[in-house]
Image 1 (cartoon, rainbow, N blue to C red):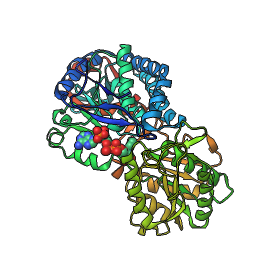
Image 2 (cartoon, protein in one colour):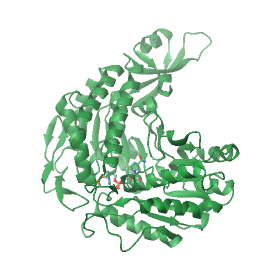
Image 3 (cartoon, protein in one colour):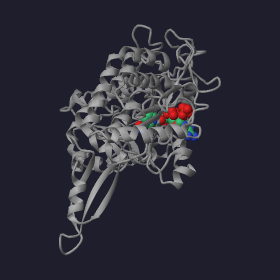
Image 4 (cartoon, rainbow, N blue to C red):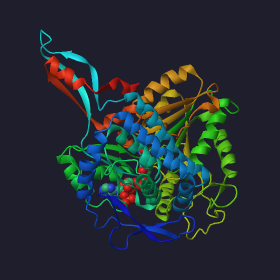
Length: 527
Ligand code: NAP
């Protein structure tokens, strides 16, 4: 197959002009499909989304839109096997990798379908109590949140073509805001197919969902003050978006989810043989291998007390040695390729930088050969564990995110150094802490909280019940400060805030009473 995937804009399936960009199989190098956004009138697509899709969505109640999300989840669940096949071919995903993306998308949609019911038959939100503004009750204030009348524009990263689309679309659609998705080019096939299936199922009103595959071209020239741009990708692209003249001039709301050098932190009690040590080893190996390390939340730095750092290295290396790396079509393969040769080259470049600071504990073997794949055309990176004894003095370890199966152990002495190292990441999506030592946790957790969107604490009592370092739960906040982009997503109904505008109306009680009709309590967003 080598077809050109069509774009869905202004209620039509439109093929982009020209030859397009090839989407390839990262195991074989085979061209699978092409995408092109050339010739697509993005301004018209956005206008159609706002005027047709937005108006129709906002005419519905929150609970009616929640029901649509449930119906979308059903459509996607019915086609799960096809999506796994596309993930295998276009992303080199193992069954577990595809599950992370596809099942994660379905789970998130179902979660918002359930949560959205709580907002009932309302169409906007009222926040807090009346504010007294005068001596009598004749003049008061009331805060409200109204859905935006613009479009939600998603510019997504290549590593989660399914989850990345639906974790954003679920809260946007629930809020009543139409979606225009621009998936990352290398893995656009899965997102495009899912949109095709949802459009064919006729669940959403016309204009509620559009997709443009290929380059973003002049997309940002057409966004307005009533739109939201939600970006996931590299810090470099994020910087370009933030400074785009139209985005700046119109104060377009922009949410950024970028990269980070997330840490796993072992406490002083996580000594060899302890439950916390074993739980940390298991999670580090999982994080390095699932999706071949191509997760924004993956563990990149492992901060370990100096006394156990070497033993930890040996334990992780032992498990990595048992992981079969190669073509996921081959029996027993646990780690697949990166999504493209370009990503492989970027990972090798980053790895070379890290090695300036580090010794190799496992991997980076020049003789490495993936199972059942030709190294000359495939995009594999051997899982690689590094050890850096330079602490805060390391030049690259705290800055370079190798977007692949690579992590670095950094030994520390004392809680203050562990805190300083974790904070040196400059803002991360997540840190996981493996300790049951109450004193250590009481010092460390508040000291790193400011620079982390999520902190996962695992001890013997939590055991294997935890949801995972890299696993983003729809009912918990996702996003991180600083280099992680400063964005916020998910967190249950909190995510709806991005698609509403808060304002206060000051006036008489009769007017405020009227405006409060059909409003749900915004406190439900944090419930
Ligand atoms: P990227 O190169 O920044 O691309 C991200 C998206 O931006 C793609 O859709 C890309 O389109 C688009 N883009 C590129 N230049 C643009 C421009 N000038 N104007 C508008 N759009 C533009 O990132 P990536 O390589 O796909 O993703 C990997 C990175 O994403 C990693 O660093 C990872 O940590 C981060 N990530 C973060 C999260 C999170 O939730 N925080 C989740 C996943 C990934 P094309 O593909 O067509 O170039």
